[in-house]
Image 1: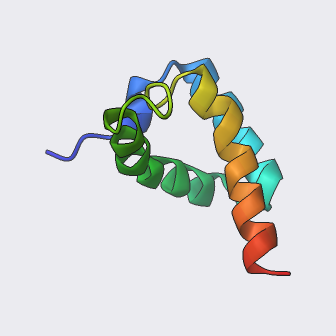
Image 2: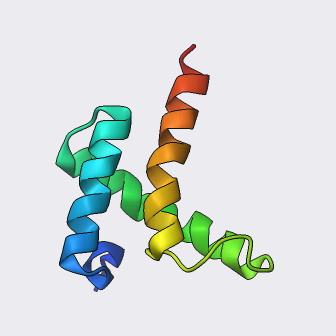
Length: 78
């Protein structure tokens, strides 16, 4: 059975993060959730690399991810 990492987040955090990602890169909710789910392995690898970030889904993640995605979109589409 495939585990959904968004299900591990508190409902309010999931809602706020999804809304922030939608606003940051102008995507719909389903797309935002897909993108958020896909970041878990990357974020976990950064955490294993010596604590470069806090845990996936934590406060740092929820605050930083929308900004990172916005930066990527802006930089990739000048």
